[in-house]
Length: 215
Image 1 (cartoon, rainbow, N blue to C red):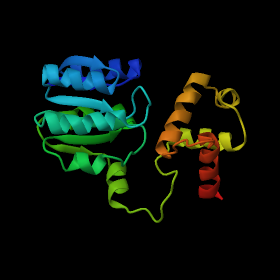
Image 2 (cartoon, one colour; image 1 turned 180 degrees about the vertical axis):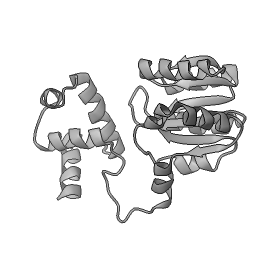
Image 3 (tube, rainbow, N blue to C red; image 1 turned 90 degrees about the vertical axis):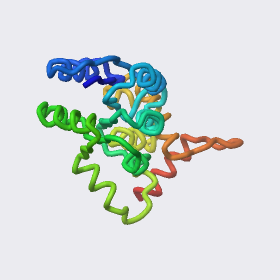
Image 4 (cartoon, rainbow, N blue to C red; image 1 turned 120 degrees about the vertical axis):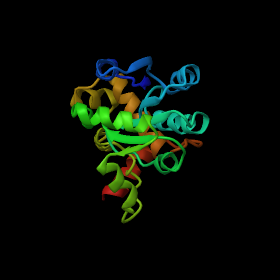
């Protein structure tokens, strides 16, 4: 099995490559962003692409967008999506495409045998869906939640924004770098689809959205 791995965290990327290589599979490319992933798949035509949902530049859903493109352009390549949390955006589109497809939460990688079996099944054209993903896709939301697509960390950051904290203050509170907090804030604003117009302050609008949803 020939594999392309797309994961922006170097440690996890190398760990996945090691697991697959030790099992006799060939890792033909290791990349850290969606654009490079698409180029690598076009070049190598692998049996499987292992794709992280969130990658540079915005850490939103770049991996899922790239996965949709792989399914469209390269139906012979199986796509195994890995995510820290369940992301429903684009998931139905991926499920209904041709070829093998899998969606697992990252903690499933800790069960090495199950992960490898899932990867091999997807590469052969089968499917591998985490039970949490299935539940999210088949259970309709009780009501519209504007915060539904935020990760737990993004909700935490938004909650601190609602307290009036600056990015520097949030970084100190959560033991993060200020750059990481800025990345989370950009993702929050993007997911809440807040477009700045005139004097509108998107940060204030995000806080108002949070307060309405949690009040």
